[in-house]
Length: 272
Image 1 (tube, helix red, strand yellow):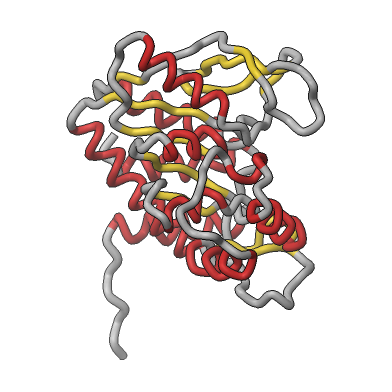
Image 2 (cartoon, helix red, strand yellow; image 1 turned 180 degrees about the vertical axis):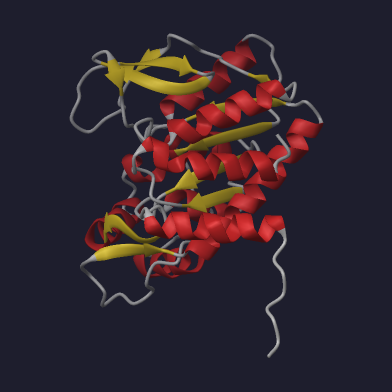
């Protein structure tokens, strides 16, 4: 009987990560309802700012086009007849894009470049961003914190109050009512980039972000790597059109501690 080939440590890491992603619903079958994903595809095509993340597109995407692209880049079912049930993210695609993200981070870290980080989903993804921020700073990168204290709107569907731009571990977040808010808005990143321009500082070499923080940076022509759920099509279409360099598909709202292996994987692959 032929024995299986011995796996390298890197392959073992990938296998272990794949198992973790699926076991905890970060990829594979996820908690995002299929009907919510399809609704967001329609809303994005209709021009809903909450679903565009600050991006504008060169081609006129139809709902059918978006579904086909999401099947390709995220792994959801491309069958429009599938209307209900939990949605699906291909864990192989997640790992592939994590490797691509780590490659970009490694290049910038080796050059001790400047980085911006921001998350519109701090209840989950801040855990990854904060770990990357620490790793990049330890490698000698400058992590920027422009426009701290900026206030603006609209940021949320149901809150008619300004949000405040704050930084946690040098990761941009939005605070509202004394807590951290979930926002899809492009305004905070637009304010951050405007502050850099007005103060005469150069644009960052890399932006690591999600939601409107990523979309607005991509629309400004910056190198952007980010995370997106299967009901957030804009960043995947931005990747298809070359505005976003890497979009990693994953469920963006699991318990923060469950993202720890993702962070460790990125740091290891980036050499941080």
